[in-house]
Structures are given as C-alpha cells and as structure tokens.
Length: 199
Image 1: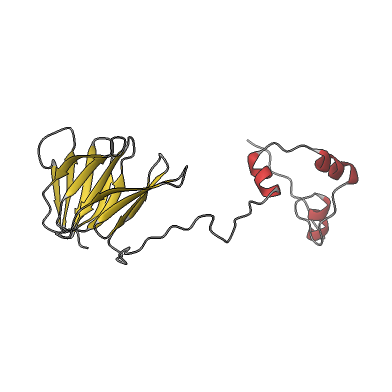
Image 2: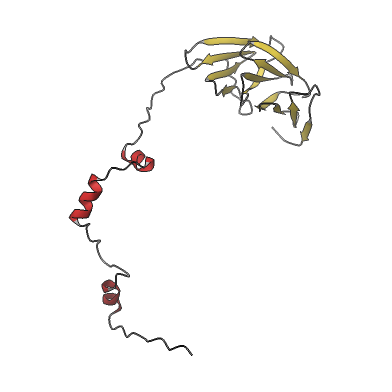
C-alpha cells in the first residue's frame, strides 16, 4: 500500500506563497543591476527584435501620381493590375495602357474602338502575357514582349468583369452569371463552365 500524503498546515497562505515564489503580490522587483547591464550590452540579431527597435516610417505623401482620365467608377470592374515584371496595366475606356515601373514610360497597348470598352485586365502569374476582358464578352490575350495580340476567346454573352491567368489556365467571370475556365494549350473554347454566380 502507498503511504498517505502528509498534509501541511498553512497559517498565513499569502506569506507562504510569497516565500515559496508561487505568487508575488505587490509591485514587481526591479532587475538586478548586473543582469540589466548584460541585457543592455547584448547584441540582438533576431529580425523581430531589430524591427521592433527601428520602426519603419511610411510616408503619407505618394511618391508617384499617375493620371487616369476616363477610369470607370464601377466596383465590379478590375481595370488595374500590376505584374511581377513591374508593369502596371490600366484599362481606360476602350484603351489599355502600360506603365513601366523602372523608367516610368507609358505605352498604349491597344484600342478596342468605339464599339467596345475594357472591363478587366489581368497579368499572367508567370510570363509576359496580359489578358483583357471586354464589354462584349471577349477575352484578348496579349504577349507584352512582342506587343502582339495572341488570341481572342469567346464564350461570354456579357461583360467580363474579372480575369485570373495562371501559366496555362485562364478563368474569367462575366455578368452573364457564368465563370469559364480555359486551358490556353487547347483549341477548345473552354474546359469548364460554372453557373449561378451573381455580379
């Protein structure tokens, strides 16, 4: 059989806990001078501590202002997209402009004419391809390295408000309540069609 545990009689619990370092009541005792001097002289190399020491200053004024006349004020349109190659694509009315972030050069990529307008732009995750959605439901694929239109995709009956272009798969959402997934390596119009979404 196990021995019964011995009970300890505690007359003053607060004094007992203070003496046994279980709880400390009152103000905290300051660090010993020798220990605090060691902390002050210690060289912290941890990134987190370094970032806490020197706070990053964020300027309240913009470093660059770009004019974008005729930019449509519509929540459902995605008319601006920045590529990993530091190019900004902007859809203004029926035109698409490219702004180079390295030299601030502006290039007019295309003009859809009076019968159509740009409703979305989207860069490829990898590669220099830009997809452009139009009000007529078309999706244009451009090779920016050659400044040449590679392909025009049909399938939507209303404006294309959102585009996501992976390396080979293009997904486009339209006001016709459909989302089309297309494999750009195939000649078929689309590989999957999703119904029921609302814009």
